[in-house]
Image (cartoon, rainbow, N blue to C red; front, side):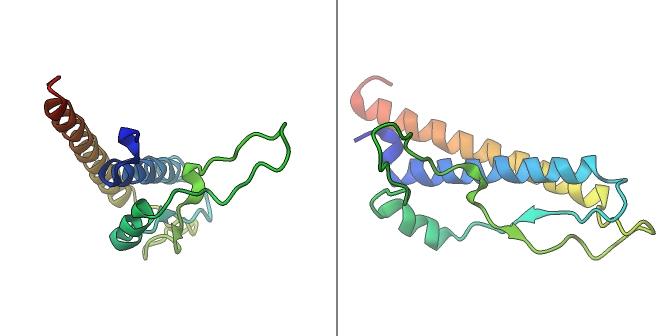
Length: 134
């Protein structure tokens, strides 16, 4: 069994992928802050219960290789749902990006990502200690 197959690491990996995808969307929002009619986007929060159940269930991507020359599919980071429409505030150009809000979301996402990385590193450290290599 690989270390990444353990439920804790699987959930942390999913969380880090979600945070990376959210950071991309937030960066797009900031980049389009002056684009007319642009609607700010964000991702829906991950549901802990469903992530826990998914990490405990047998892994299957739902994709099958039907011919020997096919490449096995992978579940990419684009599998996260987007939250509906931007904020409540719009500019005269109908742009819904509020830079202050977006920058606060960026900072929170960065902090959450650092926390997940720290937990991942501590988990690896515990495993190394248990194996006598720590």
